[in-house]
Length: 201
Ligand SMILES: C[S@@+](CC[C@H](N)C(=O)[O-])C[C@H]1O[C@@H](n2cnc3c(N)ncnc32)[C@H](O)[C@@H]1O
Image 1: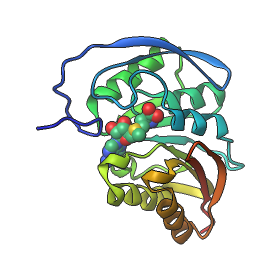
Image 2 (image 1 turned 135 degrees about the vertical axis):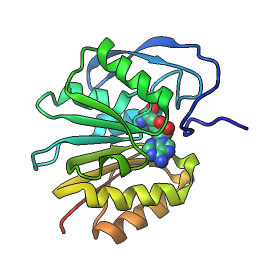
Image 3 (image 1 turned 90 degrees about the vertical axis):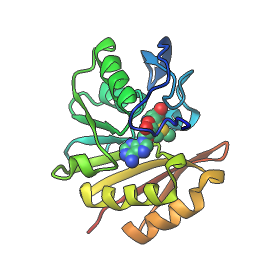
């Protein structure tokens, strides 16, 4: 059976690598491994998302949905140390790396937890949900994530998404418009779109 970064269990051999990367003006050391998304450097889209992100007006925790080895949630947790960042993923290896990367970078205002979409954090509400979604898991899964994200946001909470035009940015934008009644293209670079939708009801 083929193995993907969105699989829950990872049987591929482990070969951890550690490298440095700067995000939001902070120097990080990330450890990554086989069968984890973007293992050689921080993905261009994730970096664009992290750099574009602004805290919402509303108080509350943040959620990094599909955290992988942790670059998005950890960079945001570092910069907003008055907020708590919940980081979730389905992939066990990614979750363990995210925990390790939090420790190695001295970041404590986070919780790393297994969750299929938002099913594992059903009782929680967030001020911002930030995601580089698992395109390869399919449009149905990604759009379900958007639906569940809307329900999990506080009033005036914000959903931030990075998605490439060729991987479905137009249909993601349309889905967010339908769900939230608003969507903003915060940034566009090299075919990557940063979309933001605000929960008003
Ligand atoms: C495009 S990657 C982004 C990873 C990480 N945020 C980064 O920037 O490197 C999407 C992530 O979503 C995770 N994922 C796939 N299906 C998921 C699901 N049903 N629920 C939660 N996370 C999922 C994958 O394991 C993967 O780590």
